[in-house]
Length: 317
Image 1 (tube, one colour):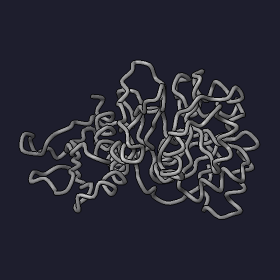
Image 2: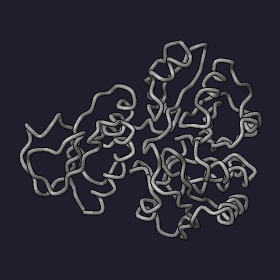
Image 3: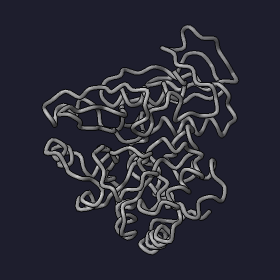
């Protein structure tokens, strides 16, 4: 496994590896992805094998140019075009009816495909030089913490990945929002870096939270994005005992009681900063061997909804 600086030469080297059927880890504005040529079934199968991801959990396809949508989806509804114009490139994934040439392994045999255009120059260049859309889930073991730095990837994988493009810490730190437009209604399949309120403002319509036992988009398992430690969600430290073996993640101010390791998501109450820090803090606690982490609740408004979604999934509640 080689960690590479994102020079033109190295990005082209990684693109060449993808065209040869390898998988490559690369940064996006949300988290790091583990990418393969979307049309190479064997390469996509490697992603599932490396991540130990079940085949019924579909992948997101990343594009660098809107023209690539034409080779992936049957049609682009006019309502979806509104979201593309507003949020692409950016952390919004759109689910549309797929064309037959998109392999079933990518979509878990669903008749839809999830697509996004990342707002990250390294990712866009990698897709462009690969001359193919790239199927890429987050570059972590299945259900584990998503990586927001190249170093996080090395802690979960050994030699399964030939190259990691190191783009530094990601901007958002939580995955993309996933939206599906079906029967003239917008459905939220996964909370993410773009809030439900922002989307509703753009489309001038309601977005419905879709609750389904069927897995039809990434990140829908009850326990997901989880550290090895037990995660306990609390209001604050007033009703828990001091614990010098546990970790503590506060929202905006340190707790009064003592813990082995304390982290504050954002002293400024900045939700974007908080989102960017959450997974990174989980990784840091894991490095210290902490087996229990208390995490404070935050308001589920705007980006806070996505942050709490990740905290709840880490706790398995």
